[in-house]
Image 1 (cartoon, helix red, strand yellow):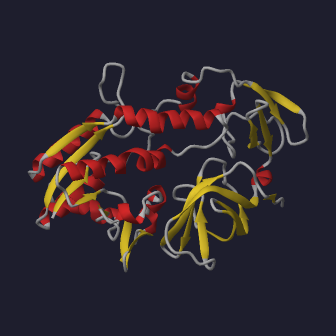
Image 2 (cartoon, rainbow, N blue to C red):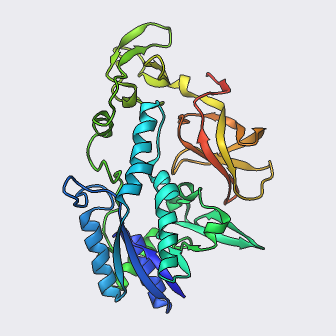
Length: 357
């Protein structure tokens, strides 16, 4: 089989390329250039850096496979970076990695695979594709501590038919051992945790430089009193504690952002506890039964048992069986039954019911 492997320069995609090559497949390595500096250079920090590309090239050379770097900076800037800025300006919590997978990476990888006469696209994500009759389902990885199905939730059955996740049944320590056995320089390379176009910089400064309107206003306490002023609603997300004036007493958290009136509302942690919220722009992925459902509202969060009610064709009400913290407007809500993903989309800013302790 001829397979295009998306190579980030990390250990996971390196092992995918090595495993597929050792299995006798015809492998082609591809790295996406997604972000660049003022002179067109790749970034030096974050993921997708110049050094990452060089590591991917060296791995490809070790494995003796063709390797290409493809420039998708324009598409990435338009669909991911602009979205990131717009969401903060609206008082929402973005997830640029999900947006990148949804709007850039897989579309372009699949098109490039077709151009190179490849049968499949393989990536280093920890997830599984399972075929059931004529349908392709996305499932969690066997080792849940590394599961990445949440950030892949946008992939349709027709897309999954052409995608492979070879690491879905392998643990991270095993992946590193395989890389070492293959003599790959990325075997013990540290995983990147930074946003590629922000790197180690303050994301607030990044957004602030790209917003051309003033959103400064009041910070309002739960009793309605004004606690101070802020420099812009884009500097806050629901659930945030850092940067909130508190003084004596319990720590304060952002509980609501009113973009229209430029107000940031704060309260105590218990004010963030909720049991009901909406999902909007919902897309139906796999078959659904309203039994034994669970939802993740952010990457690597725990599964929260829940019930759902369909409000309209693209809108759901989610009721958690136990109230929780950490549900912020703008995040994606991904529903599972067991290990299988079934629905996904963003949580709205309107809470159906706020539960207090």
